[in-house]
Image: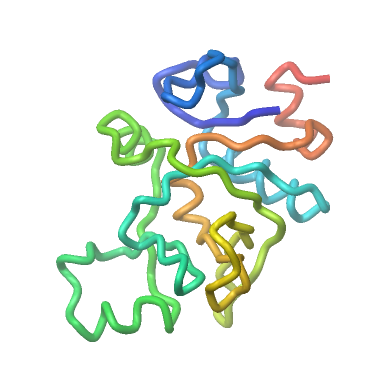
Length: 179
């Protein structure tokens, strides 16, 4: 099942995702943002991996550092010290709302420019969750070809993902009309 979350289409219905790579005009299931992240977390927690389509052009997508985050502060507003510790110490991240997500999609700040494979969940020393992601850019980073995408990054920069329908929580699947 291909899952997405945008406000310009009704929730719990299918729609054609308006991205250049959807050349076959395939439909995706549209769910509210909370369900969008819940499905992904539930899938990975229960041993299902996810085919992930996301935007990796964000300045805070740092594959060479093994991390993709959305800091609470804009990079331009950070001190040199804050920028220097961005990938070495956990920091506060922006709260992602469905309005913020939709705006980024509408103004092309979020595009479908890369496909990856989510294989697990990791918690840092503060208990903050990240998806463990296998990238196709080789193994020349500190994580041997993997990186960790924060939950705010996932919520903000994902265009859609594909998951086994058995991984969708029953209450959400019912709302989606999936048997």
